Image 1 (spheres, helix red, strand yellow):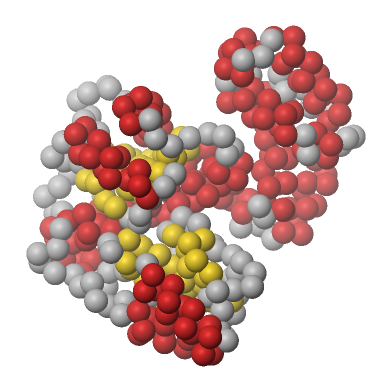
Image 2: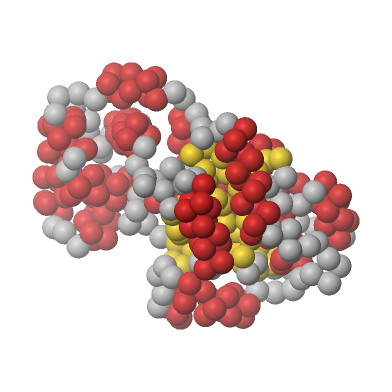
Length: 351
């Protein structure tokens, strides 16, 4: 990692070109830029080799010690792309090759990161030709790199021969859990993720976030499911940062809205917000209460118990939201409208 940082610092010193280094989940690791250029993972087909242009930025995929990272340069001109190729050459991005003796988990990591050529993908697909895919895909992101070895060891103890454990970066592990169709043990990927989180929390007592992209039923779904996992992690942390388990199905609407121009989002938001709605949005206590209430299926008793507050306190807060916004969260339709307002506000702010 220090090698990459030194190279980026040297490029900045000699050329004035600023850049920032991000994990696969868009968390900044290092930067030479005076301001954060921002990160939004481009689709896999946007990359030519390891370079892609998206949203006015140039992205370069790199690897370090079996972990995936992205270097972002502000600007999408030919000059920016040339600098990306130049940095790639300095880093020696091609040192890690697709070899027959490479571990399967490393090959899967390269596939998920979108770094295999068509020939290499076909080779890997042939390897999995006899594998019946019916796996939950989960990403597990620890609070620090020091927590990962213990987590990886724990997963190895619960995994069977049909499961796969893939290290994506210093904090992120992707876990493929085989689903036995003859067993009714887990009804969904999100249910399994919740149970896994509780077990890890009890056994290891570490801080982590689990995101799931659903069930994979073929080799061709691997990369797409990983993109879903990254999206789920990003928007899950934005919209519900106190949660530890996120499911893609809960964020499909957000994905659709995120593709709408900002000005149109503002128009929709202004059309929904009423009375003193902005005061409620800026009140963290009211927003957390509303989120927990919806999380508990609009159940007052369950919500007050989980939040450790008196039932009357919860009712008071819900009444205040209704008074200020004209939305009764006890009503399913109004709860959906409130949820939409919160999503639009987050997307407009870009936080």
